[in-house]
Image (cartoon, rainbow, N blue to C red; front, side, top):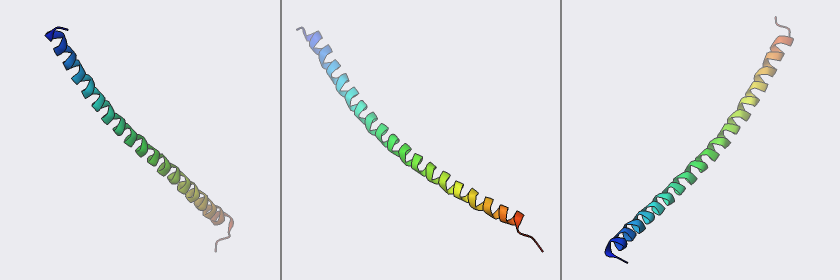
Length: 71
């Protein structure tokens, strides 16, 4: 193996190692984003349920207002 080939191989190994580190950091960030999205999804469903209950209550009050005689 010539010195030039050895230098090229050394540079390539350094690049591969750097890319592996960057990919590891990207995996960590992706896991954090997925976790945050899962939390947001749960919050979204809770808000929908609370909103649905609110609509039912307001609908019941409106129905009573319409059907109970007023003075």
